[in-house]
Length: 190
Image (cartoon, rainbow, N blue to C red; front, side, top):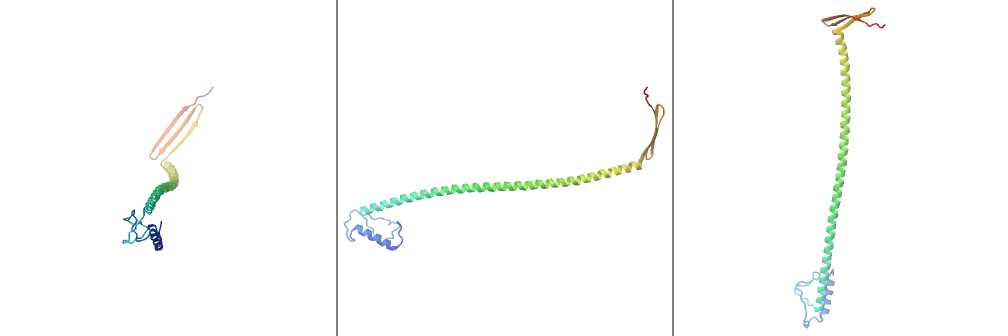
């Protein structure tokens, strides 16, 4: 029972007085004087509340029912709190899982970008290397042709006679010269 204003307190005090009988009679052998007033009643300290056996039993029953209700509400609140804590943990795990998935997706994208960039850089370097290698080959061919023509030469002639081949070669490499003459017999088919 929740008391909201002082008029209700006065009406409760009057109902107690009516239950006790008249105000001044001391003919209540079974009376209960609580040491602590009910928390919802505002009783002045100089007043004593005198209760009959029936009103005391009602008071104790009300207190017991209130205790049971408070205990039930406390258990319900604790269960709700446990469920809320569990649900928060579940949500936190889901959020952590989502964050991890987003992070892994980001890492995959970054690695894909890095891999593509490295492939493009490798392709560009390879293209440049191939161009330089081609230029080196061209330069080597011209240099070899130039050194071959400026350093030495081969000159020769041959004669074919009846059954033999006469060859005369003259090889000149700078300051050195070499002459070769040879007669090679040819086999005749009969």
